[in-house]
Length: 499
Image (cartoon, rainbow, N blue to C red):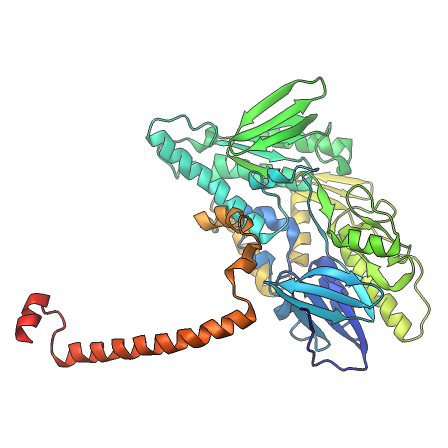
């Protein structure tokens, strides 16, 4: 049974609910800080994720805390905002309510205005079972699992080589998708193998590791244009990355991938560590909204919105960021940031009886991708920049958008260690990182099966308290007796004869 959200906010003020704590959710909330509204962010994580730097968590450069500060901490000084943990499972446009769930607890949150900034997930193009063997790059869980898989592959290769086994499949890393994420990931794994780890092992030569970038597209970084795509491919190959284009991945299993070329040729690459960076799928909430409004969805699940980012027939509902299909807008952070700010201003204008700002217009601030240290490409309007200058531009931009002074300082220090030196400060990996997701997926209700329902918990707790109290009292009496009888450190046989 769903519980209505308890709130300490002002009952008669306009209620704005924002779904998602990404760039859209966070910047939309901040834009409303001086408005006469109460804002509730409903998000399935307690942090704001700087997603463009996930690959640096996966390759040991940054910690997750530096790119994922707590949402509550960021908004602690904004008195008209509160944060509610939960994954939104339903939106009722007629009742003006949002239903969210976490570990079997369901909460209903009413709204007067709604901003849907739920983002997008990884797309496996209908082959979701690939995710078990080739994780994507959309969450902290993804990055930590990939960190475990990448560093774990080197560790297992060392063991195998010591035993005289063939370890080529362990020292072959495949990145699927030659967009910005794939290019950045392939470049960093190459640096990791060829520069960071080459002195750390005794039975393997990490510089002999293969890093392969695969894409069905005919070029690297298609959104950057042909010239920058060629330049990026050349820089990757200088790092030792094998770039395979025009190859569509048709199968992925525990030990490798299979790919098919246009001429019908099929090849297989034996590889344990695989990373999927090939495509996105809009949040399933897009379908929920489509069914209630009739707004069409495109192949990626993005919903068609009005020029002012509202849904047909529902001017109180704005959709922003990766979820929208409007004017061929790209799925990048700036679209979400600018869209959320626009939606927040529209809500404020309505409450103040001000005229609308008109249709949403996106200002393209450019695109950047880092290939390795001191190597990057940048597209800003008609300006194409490569090399060290592009890398410095990338560095400055990402420092600006990392949330919080503390995160900026620590990120800068870690970049200095990794880019000027050869160290990686975040190399800790565990089996749990690698296998926890698979273990949870085998439970019928996922993590919900690992916690008690409230009623059952209360009954079990009362029984446990009675039993536990008796155990604690008995243990305390025995501890006191051992001390008083002088039996500490005395052999058991001797203590028994003394007694």
